[in-house]
Image (tube, rainbow over all chains, first blue to last red; front, side, top):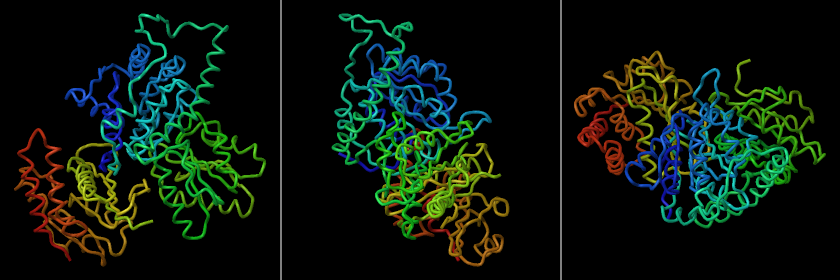
Length: 393
Length: 192
């Protein structure tokens, strides 16, 4: 049974966590994620879930407690944002290398400094290379759906990796939105019970985990993580199809919006993709063949699939809500441009850094990007590869 | 894109604009429409000018930007007139709904606009008399329903009762007062 409801992104994620009913949640409050943990802890207090809730003294401890619980064989979760994720940094790598299927929502917020509570993706991008699967959500519906699928992706025998479910701080987390939720039983049947391959509390088959690893094996272990990431792509697609059967909504590695005949395309994550789709519709009404590619999975990066989806496009703009300070563009730009390089067909790829610290992305900003692309397509000339959108200069 | 009705709320921190935007969204969603309700979070503090936004549509809404060209402007605090940018981006035929003791004609002069429609209601006084505190957010929703006519009042009140029951689980005594406030504002709002 499906029910249409109005919830904020944070409420939708808390609702998904309630239906998943994890064994352990260890978390610490931080804006704009706080509500998730606050709402979930009320479910715990009211006896609506069986979860052991661990109120910890920091995010470093939150992930550490989740690691302990997950290694013991439990289904464990945490949730965080921004500085909280930064404080977690060290242990996130450990969770990934121990191959622990911890699912954690990240409500994207700028990193200090200057201190700021609003949305950008610098927190998640900081963990780009941590070995964690990264899913992104355009709205409350996708955040809810991603949370439920993330459990199955993380725990799949071919994967066994943590999954981070991202949504935009305030824009999605605090905005009331209409979405469809599943009933508790459907979700519980879908996520099932965790069946760990090895776990610490298995007295019959004692193992040790998180060991010191010398140069004899460290390299092989890291290589295995990459292999798990590769396999995750197929698993994510399979689980997306299975989820379609219970929800009517199918998820793949990315959404290709009107790309089939597109001349110009924007690649963008999370809520801004919705705005870009709206602008693409308007431009199509004016005869401009505009399309949008919205990656749902950023790690692993769906390189072959994105190359295939963009091969017919003449000019592409990658929009990054994070700065790398490499002075040659944002993190997603580097991946997309690298992806298209092998085509050798002279697709022009440019980059726009936008929305840092919550700067509003307006319709006219996205329109400007598309018009710039049209100009590049017509003239074949790129004046500036990396630009800043909506910035006073 | 289908026509999306866009609303901008002007208020001061503590007057409940965010709550009103979210409750309005939830009630209108319960009536089968697609909605968004979201505040602009500044440095939150009591009394500071704040904005909140709604979008209402018969079809799913993709856009996630702030509302720049609102069809409807709600002003919870009359002292913001002349200070906040109330008329910014509002089209010629925009609707203003204002909590004030003044008449629509007086407000028209203060805002310096010729077109559009202006509705006024003394939401502060109504909330004092019905809820016992000057929180104009719920009565403003009654004025909104009357002024826009986009949703049937009786059905709206059924959903609002559910919302309030959920929100005030621990203090049910304020539910009736809020409903009364909405109803009075619905009846007392004046427009020109």
